[in-house]
Amino acid sequence: MKISKIILYNEPSVPEINIKRTEKFLLETFEVETQIRENIFKKLDKKTYEKIASTKIFNLKKPFQKYIPAIEDILIESRNKDMSNKEEMTLYDGIELNKIITELIPKQESTQDTLNIIFTNKLTCTFNENDFRYHARSWVGSNPTIISTTGMIEGPAKPKQYYMDLMTSFSKESIEEVKKKYKGEFLEYKDIRLAEIIEGYLLQAIFYYETGDAFCDNNQCRLFNAHWQKDLFNTQIENKKMCGKHENILTKMKNNIS
Image (cartoon, rainbow, N blue to C red; front, side):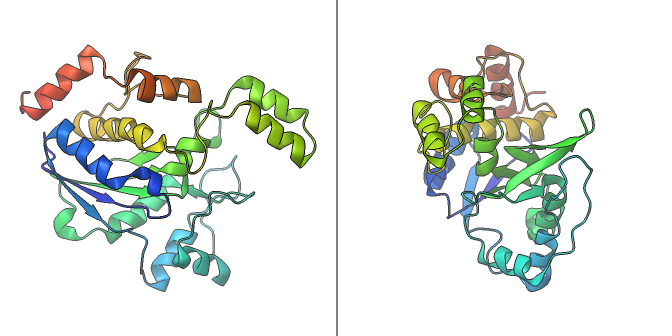
């Protein structure tokens, strides 16, 4: 492996990450030194918070347009609160946010053999030029890599019937009934299953950094790019294995075999 060290930047507003368990998983899987750091967005200067706020997305159907943040936007970033439960969720351009995070990492740790992984509750998105719209992403980048817990929840689609039922529910009470009906079939905020789901996304991010290929076509492999919540549960909780091809790649990576 070209990686000899992994640094995890925690997101304290999402304790379901279970950062100690995550550290243990990486150590056992890749056998590399792993360190835990505090939230990377904590105690930054006003200018940096302004830069972060400027990456917000307001038009889902247009490529990134830099936003000039108001004072209130900067204050919200500096408080770094959990914004995931707001009715109008804030979206960030993941590529632009990644550029800012790169500037925050110490130069001595911005090396090829040190992989920096940043957990955040910010909803990271990237613009897809195939359908000309932004899409929520669970992770963005190479080094550093941003892993969005909100992206895991909002990115992969819920059951089709769930959306159909919502379309015929016009009151707050009926919407809550629909949510109860499908409870357990998709990730929710404060969901204890996040810790297991995160492991799969960590595998994808690390394989991408090491090999340039993040995903697997085998829908039983943990590296499968799940577009539906049911596939996410299948690969990361029910099956919870890599396919033979990627197990072999992992062995070669650990043994430094080309």
